[in-house]
Image 1: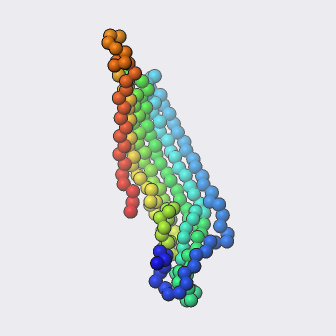
Image 2: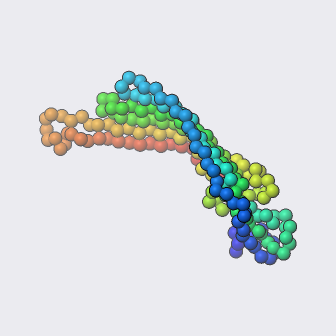
Length: 178
């Protein structure tokens, strides 16, 4: 069965819009850093991106304008997307053998139809009705990572007391929309 079939009898067609352009993307960011003594660095920044003329699949026969055909699926370049985030991190560099990073990101992703979702736009005449949270919209991300250099001792075998590290990385995030 045709995954794009709307239940109409007849032939189902697939076409590509003849004015199909290459989608333009823009990426931008602004970061501010502040050092604290020799050990710590705080970084806060805005990161964003925009995509225009993205691939969207529509059924241009959804109004049954051509009654002898079922679905006429067309690949168009009418989609948009945007991503905006506030990113912050605090890094500690080698403070008593401890190196760590604590990071938090708040972000929001919006689009009409996320790529590779294999769905049709709800209304081929008004694609903006599908504009909303993207498939990959993860609002909150919190990460903690650290490495601790185990101190070496002058007594005992060097193999057992030098060059050892303990490391950990933890990541928490909210779920994606469905």
